[in-house]
Image 1 (tube, helix red, strand yellow):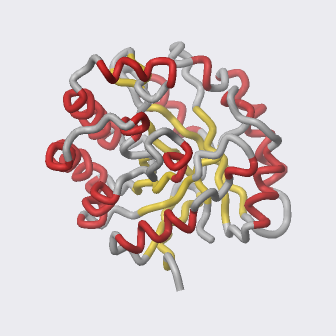
Image 2 (spheres, one colour):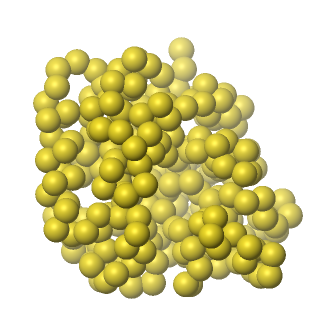
Length: 266
């Protein structure tokens, strides 16, 4: 069982269960590590309905600390999922390095003012230039990587959530420059199983994109994006098989924002 590096808590305002219950699920699965990565605060008012306030951050830290002191596996890591958007660096550039994180997961949920993965705004996909929206997304992804604020990219092809996507040829053309930057900056890419629980019914990223990442020797980690204890490690057998099929033989483990490559499977 590989580690689960994408786990939310009640501080995201749309997750259930206590943090200890998430750890208990991970323990039952035999995970060596797990990492809580709830949504980072954004004092500029960005997307406030799904993240903690800055004043709540100490409480988030205090929620995880006792679990880190608990004996036996899994080792509990302290992380954050920090969104990249126009203006994000004004706060994150100073704040992230001052925190004792084990992992900073970088994600994009907005193209301009459009929360493209929110069910309430999914209808907009029917009115936009789909390929153009994806192109904007990958341009932002390249900026995210260039910022050097993050350790891994979360759900790399999140815009496919509702089934709207460009052709494979167009996807390859627009994704490769962003993947080149991700590789150059030494970041990892998360294999995120939550897509199997969404309308697209597919792991993030697609086999095509994971193959492009493998060509660039971009390391991988795994995340369930769990919002309830029973989702921890969900479908990780399928995620590991996807990685093996792409040619991966190793995955990365994090601690204090340092990477270590370990065998993916015996």
